[in-house]
Length: 202
Image (cartoon, rainbow, N blue to C red):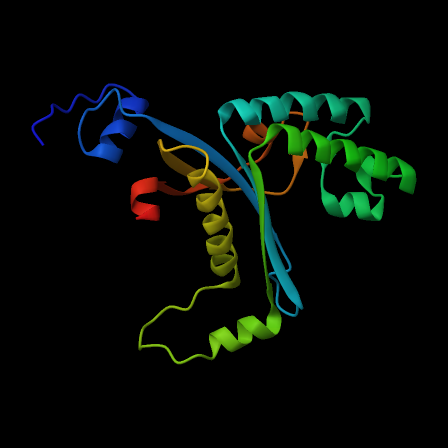
C-alpha cells in the first residue's frame, strides 16, 4: 500500500481507481456497449433491451465497414422502425432491398463486434414482480433497470471468458439511431457505470 500515486492523465487515473495504487504494468481492457430499449411505455405487452459490446479497435472496424455500407445504400440514419415502415431513408424500398441491406449489416456486426446482448420481460411478469412484498422504503426496479441488469450480466459473462486481464466496463445508455458518422459522434448518451472485473465477478 506504499506505492506512490502519480496521476498524470486519464489512463493513470484509471489504473489508480482500479488498483488504488500506481501500477503501470497492470493489464486491463476497456469495452464500450451501446443499448436501446423498446416497449417500456405503459400498455406494452413485452419490453426489451438490446445492444452490442466491443473494444475500441472493434468499434472502429464496425464504423468503417458500416459507414461504407450506409453510403452504398444511401442511408444516412438507420432506425429499425423506419426499415419496417419503409419510411425516411428507406422510403420506396422493396422487401428484397431491405433483406439485402439487413443481411449485409448483420454480417458487418457479426464480423467486427465482440457480442450482442438482449433481454426481454413480459408485462404480466413485471406486474408480478411489482406486487411482491418489499421492505418499507425499498425502491422497486423499473423495467429499464431490470432489462439493463440482464444485459449487463450477459456482457460480464462474455468478457470474462475473453481474457484473464482485468477488464473495465464503461457502459453507455445510447439512442437507437446510427448515422454515417457512426456511434461515437451520432449517438448521444450518458455514462452509466464503471466497474472492474474483480468487483463484478468475485
